Length: 356
Image 1 (spheres, rainbow, N blue to C red):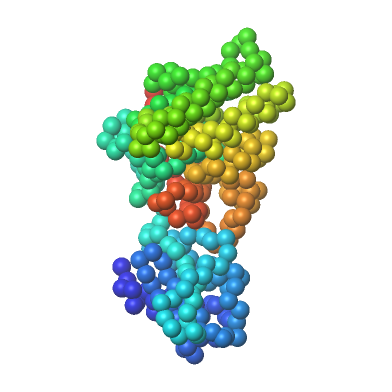
Image 2: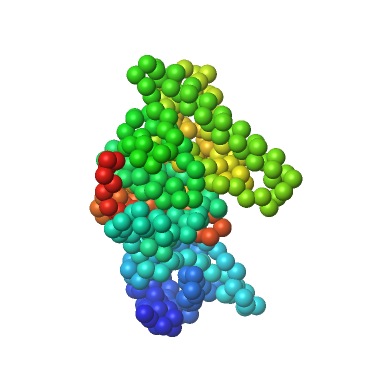
């Protein structure tokens, strides 16, 4: 691994050669400073170039490529300005480029049951050195086109969540999640032969209503004892779009209202939604619900069309997305991870007999 001074020299060389703003570090027009959490591009102002989002993205493209695979720069929506600790007005500000060391690496799990037994409570590993703390997130969304590996990812989450959370599964397709629930003695709500779609979604609303009642009960406890602790409770909904599309308007409105309230109120009471869908447009879930999702996962084909609902402001240019099955993007919005979106390689684990 390079020393910080060597890394700074390497970055300056790359920027001097490729940035093409008419000025270089050789003329003292800018400098680079490396820190543990990222690096600073420090322009000496006034300058003949404009320090704006366009410059920021250009520097990102250059440095992300030259730092790969030792570092992964975390994509920003716009220029990330930070103040510098100096009285020199010429260099009192910098553009900051946060990074994580290395690149995303897939978890390879030979025995999922043993692996889960050894996990700490409330921890959901996603990749090597990337773990979600269940105490600090609310709703989880997994999106992807058909054949992208959504069901495989969902099965992994079910296996891991079972250790730390009570689970209820809503499975409109009566497919893999139902089989997993059967093998693990988990409650499953699936359509029966005698139900039409409106009847089934009404039964789903009844379950969500009970979930909302649980939130209210726990809120009453927290009102009297703010330190009270609860068992995690997770409602898993496979193919949300299959529930919300084509049902009577009053039933759909009730479904959307319940989803929104659970997303808005669930965090402090440790009640979660885990939703899977080919897409999360306004027909799948309400906007208020989508805005409260704290773990966003997009698997499969990654382009501006597929990411428009979970990552509407994302510019994909420069992000090195891994190739292969079960790859994509992930963002975790909590107090432990930066808000930036990182490449995802979903875990690989052994086949579960009778389920997969």
